[in-house]
Length: 327
Image (cartoon, rainbow, N blue to C red):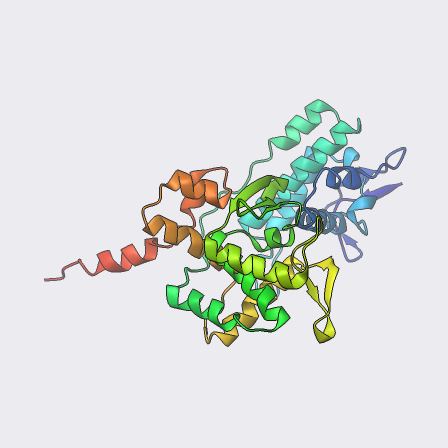
């Protein structure tokens, strides 16, 4: 029995087939079990499911990943790169395709670990080249007035406002990601030191230190929420102000909180949690904080990544273009 590599609707456009394995092993489950971050697992499983659907399976747990070879993955990435939306634009950008290539490398190594793929084939798959990307930077740095407005509009007496104020203060004052807000727990909070242990991107744990104003906002929320020895610090608030200590906030909920106070602050431009991260980095760079130090504060592996968060570039271009003389 065979499944076609790429089946869109009922039509097999490519004629490449993948043999069913002699025994079924859930390679995807094995691969995903190696990650601790819920957000990482959700993102990776979503990418694997996209590829599974394109090769004719319902989900990634049904795919015989150990039976796929370099030719299959190359063809899959080629087809994904050519898929268009109804407006004729690319469905998958180069950056997006690179994330799928990373997932392919990871799932292939998982298949090798289970003895379902040879080391030679795994090495060949790792040679799939990523796409070069050079795009106009998105997002922006917020002004001091804008971040002050976010904090002022969340400084109310309601339980939800106390929680949301602490979240906004942490985002602005530490530059952590919205998914990392969800990972903040009592076990990782050193109240004396004013530090948080978070699960960062790539499933890495790192320690984040907070300015005094941020610490005060967090402590105020903990006093309302109730301190515990373990469990998530930021949780859902049900109807009538009931705090559900068992339900951690999702990254999506953090995004909605930023949207809510952006509107209340009268900021007309869209603001995302990542814009607050960009703002954190750019402010430090503007104050001439060493780029290596900013890298460490941001939790980046490379200063090259950190430099992408520097939002001074366009300001310099606008300033310098005015120096051009026409006569």
